[in-house]
Every structure is written in structure tokens, then in C-alpha cells.
Length: 331
Image (cartoon, rainbow, N blue to C red; front, side, top):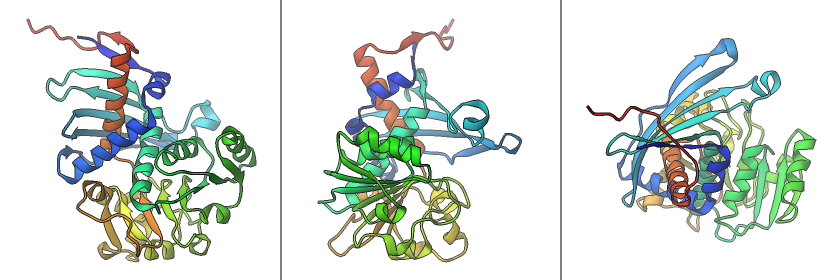
């Protein structure tokens, strides 16, 4: 047997967004049904390099498929400036859970971007108003592109407002999507007034005021991925129907982590986890809901789901580079 090597281009080619959204939704539902195994994310902190490594293993039994994988990913904040490398780099090993054979080694950087967008799309599908047609984006980086691709797969988005402190990046985003959407550069307040709002910034002090939000805006809070980060003010978190991806991760390092640590938010303020909504044991948006917020920290089960789509599609198309990685001689 040989292992399939799949680089960034192959991952992007075979991770069709609707299929990734479906797989990520299935993984969330499997988690709610306790058909997953997901040890806590572990960290190797490297302050001397202003970065860290994170290992994210998981197994998912989604009824029609099961799979296991581990992602080795980093956050090195000085990479773009000092090394001309992305802040986040990832590698994923995708394994057959029955035999443990490594079926594939694939790029985890593109995979992370895609599964993050897919998770926001799953949340948007369950929590945004059905006729949502405007999307606000705070942050115009690569993930903003993926958020638009993913969310427009579950809602008929027509108008897009993007805010970013980097005017060149903001305009580049507008130019990239001008042929598909009514897209314009705007302020954070402009973006926040849309039907759906995705925030993708690394800030540690809130930048989105409660007063700027639309009456029934759904928020995907993506940026907070470490203790101390927070994009939205406390009043928004208190007013919103709060849905999280994982209790342990969100209370430690998600959008809610700071007010949670200060005792401003407690268990009674949480509606529940997204997996329970997908599985049908918890309500999504109801007619009485106003603002809703999804706190997305990123789960290993999402990586497994996206990797499953990539591997199956690449195998069916005969794509990738087969190579001998492990010794399978049993004699």
C-alpha cells in the first residue's frame, strides 16, 4: 500500500465547498451523538520565535463514513514579515481507522481555511434569517474570501461589505469578487449592519460595537483563537443567542473567553453547541430570535471531515502522488 501526497493545489481542487460543508455538518452531528473522539488540542509554546505548535487529533464516525486524522499546525506571528511565510502552516496525516495505515499526507493550511469557512456556513444555515442576502466581513484576508464562498453556498448573498484597516487589502477583496456580488469597501459599522457578519481579526480588545449590529444579524466570530482575544463587546455577547463549537475550547480561547473569565458570562448565557443544533436536539434560529452569534474556535473533527472529502475525491480522480511512507512488511 502507498500513501497519497496531496499538496495545497490538490487540496483546493478536491475540497468542493458544498461537499466540505456537508461533511463538517455531519461531523458536528456525530460529535453531538458522541460518535467522535477528540482529545484536547495540545500546545508547544515557542515564545523565542513568537509562535507555537498545536496538535489536533480526532476520529469521526459519521454513519456513512468514518475517518481519523491528526493535524500539526502553528501560529508564528513574525513569519510574513521575517520569513515571507504565512502565519499559519499546517500538515495533516489522514489514516484508515480500521488498520491505522496513513492513507494520505496533505496540506493543512488550505484545509484549515476551508473547514473554518464551512463551519461558519453550517452555523449560518441554522442561525441566520432564511432570507439573508447581505454579508459583512471584518478583515479582508484569505479567510474572508473563504467565508464569502462558504456562506454564499447556504444563503443567497447579493451584497457584501468588507472592512479592513489595510486599504489595499480591502480593495483587492472588492476587485476579486466584483464580478459575482455587489461588493464594496466600508467601515466596521457598515459591515456589522448586514444580515450576516463574519469577523476574522486577531484583536484583543472589542472592535464591533453592539449598536452597529442589525436587528437580526447573525455573527460568525472567527478571530478569537487564543486566550485574551475578543472582537465583540460584552453587551453583544449578553444580548445574543450564543452558540459555541466546543465548551472547553470556547471558554478557554474563543470569543467568549475574556468575559467568561471575568464572570460576565456563565453557563446560563449559552444556548448550546452547534453540533446539538445540527443533530436536531437543540433549536436553531426561531421567530423570536434577534441577534445570534456563533463562537468558532476550530475543531479537529472539522479537519477530519474536510480531509475525508479531499482524500475521497482525489482518489476517485487519480490525483496526488503515491509514495511509500511506512514499512508494511510483516515478516
